Image (tube, rainbow, N blue to C red):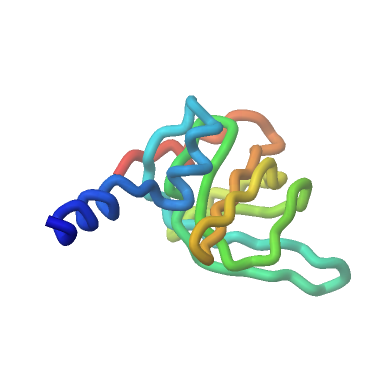
Length: 117
């Protein structure tokens, strides 16, 4: 009996990105592979490949290991298509050692990030 209730609890837990997405009600579940680049001054750029898990026309939410904070500027590039968008970090959610990041697109609506799985 304890085993069943434990499994139900795990099944009902929301992912880190899903928890952050609740603050962005227009965001829908998507799976868009991207390269995230964070300029750090001079010639230094931090990069990582990740998946946009939730998006609206104006926001994207993804898991990240980069040292991103509110207000940081980033560039998202769709892989392999090469579409690019500049954005700023609007929110960060930490949960169980993971970090979800919500970014707002600087040029307004960004259609390529709205692809559904």
